Length: 91
Image 1 (cartoon, helix red, strand yellow):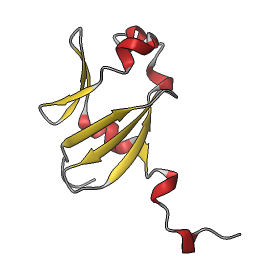
Image 2 (image 1 turned 90 degrees about the vertical axis):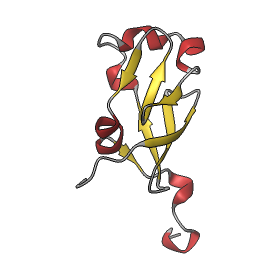
Image 3 (image 1 turned 120 degrees about the horizontal axis):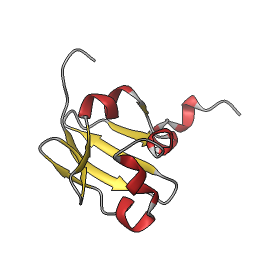
């Protein structure tokens, strides 16, 4: 990514993923599972806390002063499967 893009919307999902919308309107899916054994993210193993993800200052934040850098969210996220156009799927 050449330019740092802010997160403008987040939808936490029950499978430990975040559905993100960046300022360029691109939707991406970030799986936080690999981070859950590292501080401060260990607290996010609590599904009630994980589901409280919101956007502040261009990134995703949780209560308890937990956040994750927007460049990490961009670099390690992927376009969600449902964003693939039907004609691109080979049957």
